[in-house]
Length: 357
Image (tube, rainbow, N blue to C red; front, side):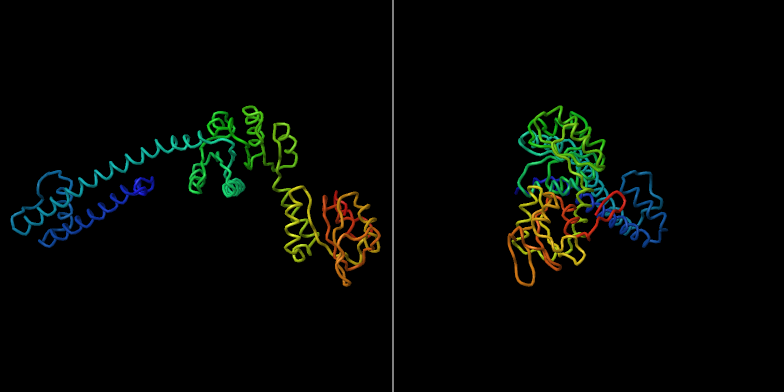
């Protein structure tokens, strides 16, 4: 019973009615035209007579209706055609009414749901990052509101089950409509740095205590976003490049991690550390160094947590343990690049552009 009151069902019903009646009218017009042509009429005279009859214009008969056959065809065309046109007009009126009601009621219903929210998250922008963010938040049971200017993306957000408002998040009224005064956090993830800065400024002015997480494209934007009031700044391009660099610097990491190491890495990521695995090459500057000396060279950038060699696995190797060619090291790294300079790079620094390896 509840299904009969869903929006899609209510809107779909008049659409189906219009399509069904149009098909019925097409059959009636084609059938009547063929019937008149069967009496020797030309196609032009037949279709003209049928349309005059169906639309009840009554301009007059193009040919005499003087046989029982023509009387029957004309009566059938009047009964079926006029009835069909009445039904078609009614279905069109119903369709237009439902569409207008939907446009009128949908925003009000959306605002009513948003007005009931508290401690929710406002997601500004429903692009690639916004879409993934909203999905993860919803999966985690966090209430959220999506703000987006693009009507197509609004439809996509609603289809995904999110509360969504159409509007420019840089405007105060739009943020107020999203309940920023009751929200726990705001994430602005637009691909436009200037827009993210302006949204951050506006949101901080409206809600001084709210947590703001902002996306930045250019590294120079980070300081601007923080000055604007962002608590955290995420640079997707920088994160992606760093991750690729780690995969290239530590190719063995992908194959050597076991389930326990993967769980440990996830925990370490939460506090800004990474768990990496590497094999010491014959030209590495770390060959014949002690564990203590290698860690000292790194200046606290990493700790050697495990050492694997032919003789077996050495967990928490002693400070005096020497590193040999072919040793597989599992390290906890705060700065993977600094760790690579000590453990992966050959003896002597290699300078490429502004970077030293």
